[in-house]
Image (cartoon, rainbow, N blue to C red; front, side):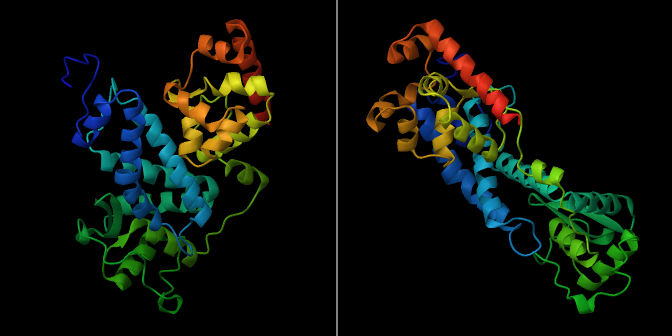
Length: 332
């Protein structure tokens, strides 16, 4: 397919996205699934593995939720690729940035004290002439200024509590403490590993509050589905949709979009929130009947009206009522 065949198409810079840019109909979903599960997923797994383990910040459930959240955001981006004002120049770099941002958002939300420590370390490393912070292969590396540009030799700070000097323990004098730490490591350190190490060394702990507990869910006020950002948002939305009256949930689900473009029904299945058969049951359809219209979702109001044997205005009214109920319940 040439650009003249699709004049509105802005071709992506990364050649791996050309198949998606030229895809139409059911091929779009196949191309997106290939990019997410064959290209993006190995990189996502690799990055998230660096944050697992004692003191690293991510429990197994966090990893699962973050993976689904990243998939959700990737689907939203990839579906807007044709005609996008900002095409993706490097897909793997885009996935890496998206993953690191999701992890950092999660850690800031769940571990605010760690986030404050990270900011203090970053500031010191970039303002103290004895120290430096630099990127290596999408990772930030910290160390003495004369090591700038070198790779980290290990994924963790290999210092025992007994080997830490009093100078290293001075969290109130971060610059001097870091100089002492790097004097002991004798090599650069991955920045996030340094954050985890100093958090333990300086006894940085999280004070659990009711407000922090609420913020950790990542919830947003959702009008229908316009502000879906995390797997938790989608999980709560799905639970509330199931509580709607049958006609309301049909009118809503068959037309529901996130960010005006993404088919929410496919997101619910793709991110593992519900099985395809579960979605069919909620719509009071057989799996075969849902499969027959799957590639056409979201449907227009006239087609939904025909399926439900009501008028187009009744479909609009049912969906409006459903959205109002969702807004009330999800803003609690």
